[in-house]
Image (cartoon, rainbow, N blue to C red; front, side):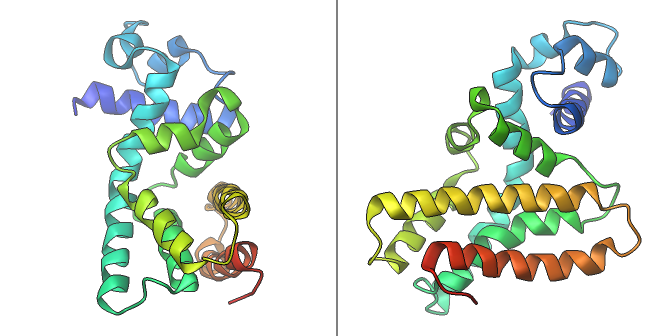
Length: 205
C-alpha cells in the first residue's frame, strides 16, 4: 500500500472513531493525512463506503489470521464444539489489538461508529472483505455447537454478542492512556468472554 493511501486510512479511522462517520468530510480526512490535494481520498478510495470497507480490510487482516490460528488449534484438539473456547477465539484477537505496541489506535471506536450508523452496516461491510473467512467459520462452528437454538434465536444472540464485544472493547480503547489500563484490560476480556457466552447459551463460563 502506498504511504499516502495508508496515511489516509489512519486519518479516516481516527476521525471516524472520534467524531462519527457522517460528521467528517473527505476534505477533512485529506487534510489530517497531510494531503494538499483535497480530492486525494476520492482518488485513492472513492467515497465513504469504499473508505470504510478499506479500513476494515486493512485492520482485519491480522485479526482474521489470529482467529484462524485459534480455530485451527481448536480443531486439532477436538474443541470445535466448545462454545466457550469459540467465544474466546472470537473476542481475544480483537482484544489483543488494545495491548499491542505503539500508540493507542482508534479501530474499535471506528467499528462502534459503523454499528451506530445504519448506512455503514458493519456486518455487510465486514462480510464482503477478503479477511472475513474466520467470522464465517466461527459462525458455522458456534451454530453447530448450539443445535438446540432455533436459527432466529441464534442469529439474534450472535448479533447481540457482536454489539457487546465491539462497544465494550471500544470503551476500553478510549481509556488506554490511563495508568492501570493494561491490568484492567485482562480483567475486562475475561468478563467480556463470560458475558458473551451467557448471551449465546444462557450459561456463564
